[in-house]
Length: 229
Image (cartoon, rainbow, N blue to C red; front, side):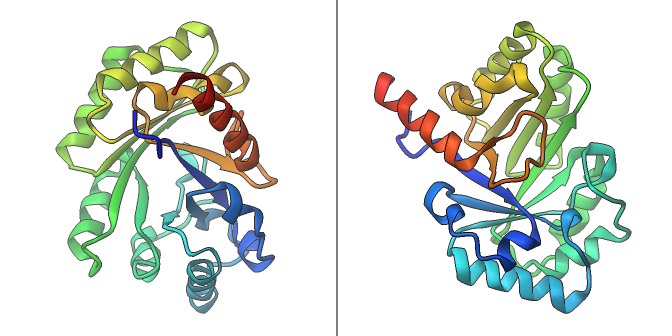
């Protein structure tokens, strides 16, 4: 297992950029800016916030405008125009696999061909059966996307084991797996052992059920690596 895995992602809002929160620099490898959590979508504000994040944190940035159907804060019309507005500031773009047309259109219209696409699936109720998750992964491969993200609610240890199994099966496919909720805590610090390449944390305000802070993630993962590597 490469020593650098997993990459720790700090999922943040615009206020974290404006407040110049230095904790991100110490404990995160990648920054996710959640545009659906911004106080305004005014064009200059949006561009200035991303530009400041690039300068302030000097880390790769994921641009995410999450749809309400998969945990987004609000409905944003014409997400494509906003994604194209921030294309010069981001390394990754995260779009739901349920909006595959948006992924394809962004890929065809962006002038920044270096952007990596994260095709994501979120289920805040349950963890589907392995066969159903495999269908989602097949959809992602068919688009195609560069990274597949599967985040499901963990209601039992069986759910956690299902996600670990799917991670191991597709570990050569640039996959991110997250088992959300209190019962899924272990996935956030150990799914990388099965092949998950990234894990998400917050810096004070959680953006998903069961999410740890980037400081906690760093601590737990570092301890785990000392024990087994």
